[in-house]
Every structure is written in C-alpha cells, then in structure tokens.
Image (tube, rainbow, N blue to C red; front, side, top):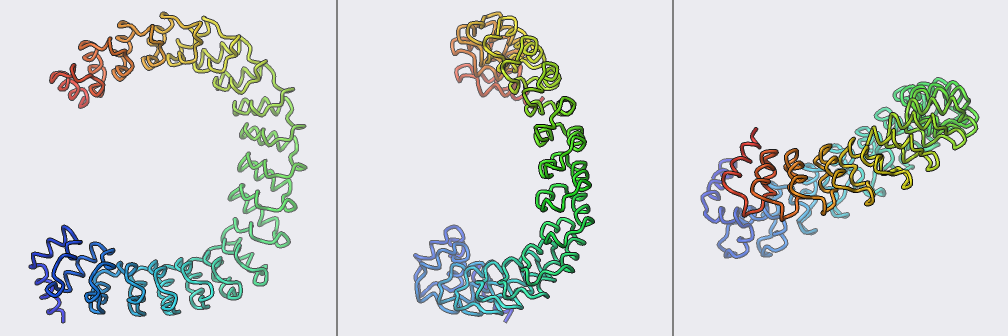
Length: 458
C-alpha cells in the first residue's frame, strides 16, 4: 500500500500539469474531465478550497472526498453537507476541534463531542446545549473549570461543580445555589482568595476577607458593605489608596482619609467633602499635584496653587480663573512655556510671551497676534527650531529659516517655496540626512544625495 501510494505521488509530481495547478489552481477547471487524474483535482482543491463547489459533479466522488480529507482535513468546512459523513466529521474534529462548528446537526453525536472537548475543552461552546451529555460536560469542565458556565443547570451535579472549582476557583461564580456548599466555598477561597467575590456573605469570614484584600484590594468593590470592617478598610487603603472609593462612607474617617492621601494624593477625590480639611488637601497636593483638581474651593489657597504649579506647571488649567494670578502664571510659564495657553487673556503681555518662548520655542503657537513680532519669533527659533511652523508667514525670512534649518533639517518642509535655495537644502541635509526627501527635484543633485546617505549611516 505504502509503495503504491509513493509511486502514485511520484507520478503526480512528474505530471507537468501539477506545476500549472500550483501556479493557478483554477486551471484545473479547463482540463479535460476524462483525462485528468483525481490527484490533480485534489491538489487544486487543497490550494483553493473554494474550488470544491465548482468542480465537475462526476469528480466529486467518495474517492475524491476521502482522498482530500486524508491529505487536507482543513478542507472539511468547504465540503457540501451531503459529503460530511460521520467518518469525515470525526476525522475533521480529530484534526481540529473548531471543525465542530461545520458539522451538520444530523451528524452530531456524543462520540464527536467527546473527541472535540478532549482536544480542546473550550469546544463545548460549539455543542448545542440540548445535545450536551454528562460525559462531554465532565471532560470540558475538567479541562477548563470556567466551562461550567456552559453546562446546563440540570447537569451541574455536585461532582462536576467540585471538578470545576478544583480546576479554577472562579468557577464558583457558575455553581447553582442548590449545589453551593460552605465546604466548596472554603475550597475555592483557599485556592484563590479572590474567589470570595462569589461566596454568599453569610459564609464570608473576616479571615477570608483579609486574605483577599491583602492579595488584591480591588476586590473590595465586589464585596457587600456589611463585611467591610475598619480593619479591612485600613488594609485595603494601605494596599491601594484609591480603594478608598469602595469603602463605606461611615468608615472613611479623618485618620483613614489622611492615610490614603499620604500614600496617593489622588485619593482626595474619594474623601468625603466634610473631611477635605486643610491638612488633608495640602498633603494630597504635596504628594500628587494633580489632586489640586479635587480641592474644594473654600480650601483652595494661593499657597496650595503654587505648590501644584511648581511641580506641574501645566496644571494651571485646573486652577480657577480668578486664582490664576500674574505671579502664578509667570511661575508656570517660566517652568513650561506651554502653560501660556492657560493664562487668562487679560494676563498675557509681551514680557510673558517672551518668557514662554524662551523656555519652549513651540509655545509660540499660543502667543496672541498682538504680541507677535519678528524678534519674538527669532527667540522662539533659538529655543527650538521646531517652532518654525508657528512663525507667521510675514516673519519667515531667509535668516530666520536658515537658523531653524541649521538645527533641524526637517524644518525645510516649512520654509516658503521662494526661500528654498540650493544652499539651504545643503544646510538641511548636513543637519539630517532624512531632509533629502524634502528637497525639490530641481535642487536634488547626485552630490546632495550622496551626502544624505553618508549622514544616514553616521
């Protein structure tokens, strides 16, 4: 048998039509039906499975289907329903459990399902619920406990629930009340404290809760409030200060809130309004300047604003307009010129604009037209050549563009067309080889191209 098969394969390989099909599988359709070997049809269909529906009827025999399934079981999905016999269905599923989705309903059987879930437990999702059997469910659940969610309640026996939880404690979420026992819950939380989320509150012990919080304080959000004690609250906040959000308000004491903001100032947003006192707010902003956004208006002082701006100048936007004083704006802009965008219009003047572009040239984009000048643009370019796109057209002269290009050749893209000269292009490429892509064709010389290559390699 093996000898005959090998001989057949050698014969097929020697057939020049095989190469033709390899290059164009559809060429099989133009070959004489009576003179074309079955192997060539199998070869064509394996390369282009959609051809199965277009092959001559007298070619689509059991020999063809058996031959192609033997060599290319992936083609099962493309077979007509009538060709999907029990044996071929089983062969397809043995090769790939996902083939179960393409099995006709009439061909489905427990043997087929067992084969599928043995190979891939999650294949239970492709089994119609009405056809599930205890054995199929048992195999699927033992392979992945979370598959218990796909098991019909009538088949969720104590044994299968036990198996599911043993594989994955989170499967406890899918155990029906009738099968839920304290022992099973204990087993789940012993294996994974996070499973406490699925335990009835009357079976939750303080020990269970503390272990779960110690492992992941975010689980607090899934627990009933009655099991959260002051001890649990403190542990949760110590582990994750932002878990203050999930603690009952009656347990959010001054002491607990202070602890939370000491660890993460942003916890201030979860501190009850009446507990956001000066000490709590100051601590929060010192730890996390962004917490300034959660400070009540009556607690917001100029001193607190300075603390925030000194560390995060862009927070100027979060400060109420009436508190954005000249001193505060100057401080912010001196640290980060882009803070100019958050300065009230009436607070902007030429001096502040100069300070902004001196710190960051690209802050030029926030300078009002009335304060824009050639000198200011030149200062912006000195600070950062990337400011060129924000320089008004009337100020983009040759010296200013030259200065930008010397520092960043890619700024050539923003130079007015009339100012783009051979010398400027050379300066751009010297600054960065990538600038060659921005050089106009009539100025792109072989020498310039060579220079760009050298620069790219350097």
